[in-house]
View 1 (cartoon, rainbow, N blue to C red):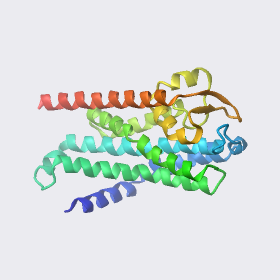
View 2: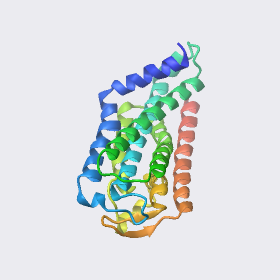
View 3: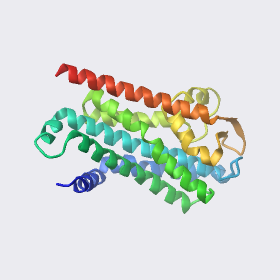
Length: 256
């Protein structure tokens, strides 16, 4: 079996999985309709002048959907390897490195789906955004999901069960809330949220739209996140997840 054939078959297998498709594609789209379309204040223009509040919400929920995809797929791949799939691969012509590459491509493909669907919903509803910034935020949204592949891998290595990976994906709802993904936060929740893993990647994806400005639920702003702080958040949490994966993998190898 060629690599491309394996990727297509496994991608189709994950897409046909109702639970995967629901939480990765359908749920984020529904959340966007609730938080980004149905309320009147979503049509207010952002202070930056590059779009409206609906566009701000669209990017946040698209990041949540893409992160759910990479978390789920990467975590499941880790569980598969630890439950014996790695020994089966050793009997075939597909080495571990190629298996990991295939799973990475599949995870990225699944991450693109919620971004595409939510942006299409926004395009045909109330979302307003400059065309160039629309493409820029969509591309950064996919990139922003990559650290959560490490998060999913960490969950898979730590607990070695699909249920644990599902729970890790469920935790993303809380992280998304604290990351300012669903609706604008303020006060102490915003102060705490700035230190959570979803906040940095969401702010990075939104940067072409609002240039770091933090809007309220009306038409004002309550602060600005400098780009260096956003990148620092992304870098620190990516490093935390990567170190955790390395230590857990090393522990697993030592036990053998």
